[in-house]
Structures are given as C-alpha cells and as structure tokens.
Figure 1: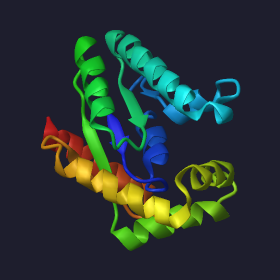
Figure 2 (figure 1 turned 90 degrees about the vertical axis):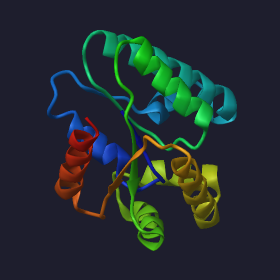
Figure 3 (figure 1 turned 30 degrees about the vertical axis):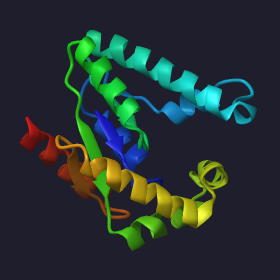
Length: 179
C-alpha cells in the first residue's frame, strides 16, 4: 500500500500506526533509505533512484513472505506508481494507492507546523530545502492532485491535524470498502 500525499499530511504517522496491527507488517520509508546512503546530499538524483530500486526489491521480498508493506511517500510520477504496482503484483500481492487529503489551506498549515515539532524539525528543514518553501509545497499539492485525478483506482482518505486515530479509522474503513 502506498500512502501518498503532500509533506506533513500524516503519511509516516499513519504508516507507523498501521503496522502496529498486522504481524510483521513493514512501514518502508524510502526517504530513510535515501538518507542512509553515503553522500546522498551531493548525489540527490542518484540517491533517490537507488533508494527507489532498493525499496522495490524490499517490497517484493516482504510481500512474497506473506506480509503487508506500507510505503509512506509523496509520489507524483506515474512511472514509479506503476513500478510499485508491478512489484506488488509480481510478489503475488495487491497494490493499494491511497491519497491522504486535507483542504489546501490546512495542508499548507500542517506542513508549516512541522517546523515547530521537535521530532520533525530536521526532516522539515530538509524538505523545505528540497522543494523551495511554501511555493514549492503548493506546486507539490497541485502535482499530486493532477496525478490522483488520473488514477481511477486511487483511494482518497481525508485526514485532520492531530486526529491520528480518527484518520486511522478512516483509512481502515476505506481499505475495507476497496476490498
């Protein structure tokens, strides 16, 4: 399952919450893989491509072992969405594409709020540097909305800041409806 959405929308939080239930489920954060590569900051494109390839291999291995994989990642490239789906299907799994949403103003505020969160401040600073601040975030929101509009099987789950359990219940309900 891919949890997609703009930075700060709750992807990682919900992925961590999700894996508390199914035994041996994996929350696979591609950004963490990328940051684990030596000199990734000076090789952004190569590090990103390598992290995505590693993630696809891990997804295949974990699904083939019979366990869930949840990937909390902003993805606005249809080719990588298709690669995720192909990896799941090749391992005998099913690909679920979930978009976490909030109204535009709230999504932008949630992103800005991460700058005040001690646990997220380093990741936030990295994201701001990579995307170019609020204007870059607004462009990311536009790109992901355009991609989502072209993905007929995509599942949308509304989330609200600070409402983790409510958002988790909405995610589980949406997944059950998609089954």
